[in-house]
Length: 565
Image (tube, rainbow, N blue to C red; front, side, top):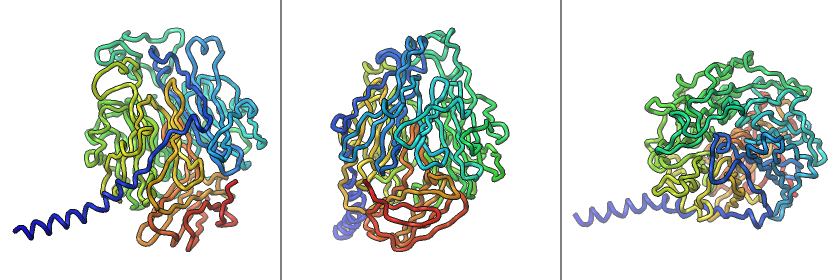
């Protein structure tokens, strides 16, 4: 009997050893903001009192290579105060140029990004296909489109190009939904406000939290409809919301959107996260129109049929089965939701099978992404949190204003484990975080993170690896397809493992990330096969690709090593 028990124990130890090794591979995320020279301070109303809901929202941030030198730069969105907003004296955000030595230089003034606004979010892409990255800012109306002049400067052309949406916009996303090689633009709008009659804390049933009067909304306030702008090809856009069938008839509280070929049929669909309402899934019919299928696919509400306060979202294939899964963060007293793609246009809320169900309950989740933190070939879940009511700074218990980051390690497709505290003290340091962006800013092969924090400095979290795994990164250059290759699908096969990456910039909330495709390869030093499915329908295949390199894949010229300056 003792011998049998010993054998069982030994077998269990062997079975557990791989997971133990995985836990030891969790990287440290180190706050290098100060050393990097990032001195920006976010303003969004008063730090200690949030009377109105727009003082608690926003805080976007972006990684973007605006000067094309192969090093991701950082743009930080700035908020304002009610006094400055009413006086027309809003501050502006900041652009930090990556110098390639771990530091950044504030180039906002020289770049011409000095037009003030009460900013909410940012997205970035080459909307005019001229080879450089443009910037779109969502504001407490109107929005700004900064066209990149190609010489390190920008010109604001939002009104001229037809995308100066006058509403309270939250997030925006570029994607080529009609396959014409030009990036279109979806803008999420939040709440309709009368600044001459703002709802005061405690003024109605929806203006209390834990028995205390707080900012009102969103419930009880009128929502604003989202807008889809079609790219005309001459730099201008046309409002195609109704023609495309993406009319937000119920005026839901839109907070984030992701373009993804979520059903795998070769064109871009649209997933929209709504606060305190059902999420929307617009499936592309392939003829320039969409059909809303949120409820029918299981992606609108939680497993028990409840609306959730969705905020940060991402779409990716986390279990390497070739199908796109969905993750969405939510308000406290609820859980962030993991939807598994079951096939046949059906997604299942499997959060109850993961540690997210319990761990997420006190958190208010915002910026989020699927990303492979330990380069083992399996995408993990990262997101950042922060409450909206400052009086919780002084509250006792788990629900606080300043909240830690969350990291869930993917156990090779067998589930997730909460390893947040293993990611280092800088990762879990309490902040009231909002948007988050992701990129390998130091080009060392792993993904770093920059986080926007409410009434605080951003946090640049450098990933310091503790593994010896291999990696690869691909930058795309479209010809028939849009220049950034947004919407392209890259598949990497190493042995029996096949990974899928969809090129996009707008994930998370209020934010934009580096479009370069990033793959962890585990122990594989050579990739057996790389396949690129371009939005144009073009398919490229490359074999025996060396790991630990940056590559450029040109839609016409193929694969080449990408020199990093």
